[in-house]
Length: 158
Image 1 (spheres, rainbow, N blue to C red):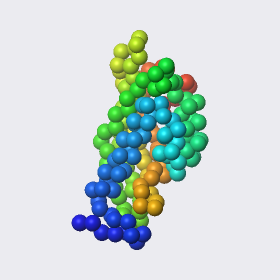
Image 2 (image 1 turned 180 degrees about the vertical axis):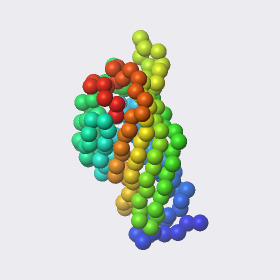
Image 3 (image 1 turned 180 degrees about the horizontal axis):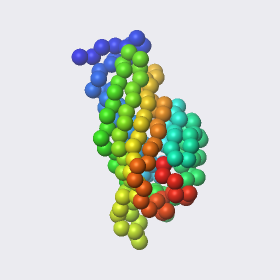
């Protein structure tokens, strides 16, 4: 059953869940493509918090990734971020949602066999604005750390 929120936007639970799930997936795809400008657009209204502190807004998040992540000749960090165990809770009346999920980043290079390099958790907050769900916060918590020396310039684990 679909109802409408006070702003007139349909509040179909499954379509909102899917839209938020797609935002979570888009982050992994953009990072793995080395498209940090795209990450900046995706997180334009967000605060990103990780082991090295917090940054807010798309431009600051884009710069943080450019400064921190090593990019190879193919224009990518040669990683695949796998996001699992996604749990999303939506408050349609408030136009907000929270999620938590696990991530594992894999990396392979011509002289480095495919291997997991870091895993942890994402804790995200979202708001519905103008009928669209947007990130407003991404908190990254690293649980397990492998060899990130060929992925991150300062070997932190965001």
